[in-house]
Length: 290
Image (cartoon, rainbow, N blue to C red; front, top):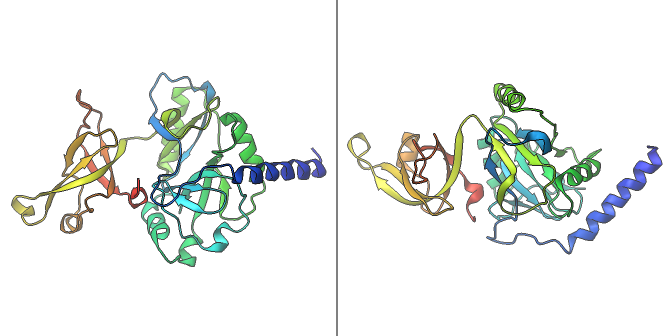
């Protein structure tokens, strides 16, 4: 394709982006961003229709064509230079500070007054175009055209690849984990963008984890007398249980607030649906308005 044809294609894509802006629903205030949610990958799933990418250890971000929001629906106070020149089209991605730097990313994104130095370590890793209207195969091609070359050093399209078998997928998982990644994501090529949880989007990690809302603080006993003993939590599905493992002494003295969200690890599920051996993983301030 000639340079002139590339220019025409890009101008057409930008025109499409501009036409979507006014017609696209956008999160506001405490309303959660309308994003796709992932199920957990299971052996036996047909991989032929899936694209595979790294699972970035950051905070889910939603660019509505004008500004950034967290998955929970809170505005992200990024510096103006960070989003300067971004396309006026909704983009779904991850606000990422690098492998193993989730706490740094959280601290940067949560600041009411943006820290320029901290934001220069951030990237918005884009993996989907929510308002495009096509299937993921088509959305991916449009995304790659939109961000190649990227209009901003801070904006990148997530690399996607095909994997032929479960054995190859597990080998790739071991490779990225050894390099410090969190895991893998799988996008079904023949899927529409739907703001719900389904097998159209899958996650694969070396451990199970999930999110829950803190609903009570349970008092400690023995050496934890006068401190937090466990968090009573509730899942989005309405299941309630307590988590007492994985908390540091500092977190027992100043526990996650009632109403806040946390992530926890577990090892499979009981017949009741409750997680086995649930262990506190970290606080999730990005889900505060969920």
